[in-house]
Image (cartoon, rainbow, N blue to C red):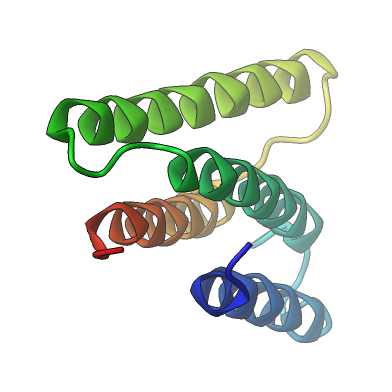
Length: 123
């Protein structure tokens, strides 16, 4: 595994966790649930590592395989997070709130953008 290509993902993971841990003491819990954001961040990090290993094995000379790989990775992430959201909703816990969802969606977009950049790099 090329560690240099994983540095942006690792940096986002550490940065998001550091922000969540420090901001947890500054903001009240009813505004942003930082434990939820850290759980989403961990799930996104693990999915990115999985997708990185999958992207490394594709043939970059075949454009169809590259597009299929990106589509499968995005669909897989969406299915896993839809299942996690459904499981969270059925536990009858407190509502999540819009700021928490927006910060989680921002993390999702950042991780997805970095994964798409992996497919655009020349080998």
